[in-house]
Image (cartoon, rainbow, N blue to C red; front, side, top):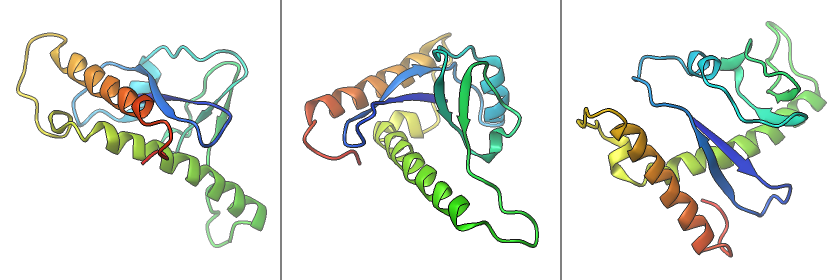
Length: 141
């Protein structure tokens, strides 16, 4: 699970700032989120998807898309708000794909020594951050 920092300027970089421990593929992200202490300051905003419906943090504003009611349509305002959140999430998904350029993150890691998998993920995130800083004039992909 990754936590991202983004400045108020939409053209600035998106960087990884914190990582949770790595878990097997069958552990749901919400359980990982509940078990991980987050270093978010008070009055910050957290963008999350509908898989985290009951997840909250004290003094943190949760930004989540509005779910379409059964048999009804979303209002125009709700639809526009969902599109704005989708655009922000899309940038984060691009960061995830940038981290996965390091093939060792995508493939099965057969290194069983304690802490090695976490170290691999930290290094791949550091390489992403380095790539972003190296080419600040290019838009995030």
